[in-house]
Image 1: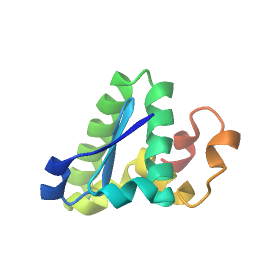
Image 2: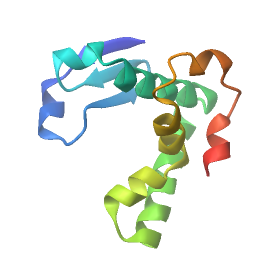
Image 3: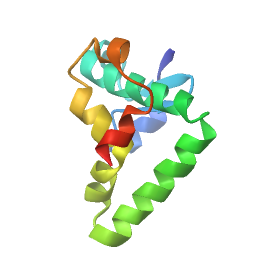
Image 4: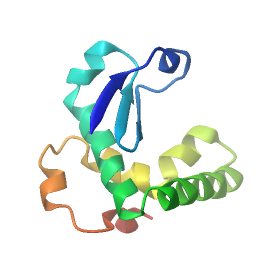
Length: 108
């Protein structure tokens, strides 16, 4: 895992994004945000489980499925199983040590 502060993220409405093997954060102080970093680490694990490329494919498919169903971009994003798992467990710093394979499946 490599954490990088990226200025282009300042123009987006996100604080961080995981693109294996990197975690990009908006502000330098976000590198110390344990909840944000844990959230993104969960995504890195999900990416590995799905051989990286399949994570992105399923992420986009799931996003558009929810977007067309809900007609709301934010609700569609929050309905993605990968995001549901990451948000539900982001406060648990030890989660990745006990996380079972493909745990995101429980959040569909």
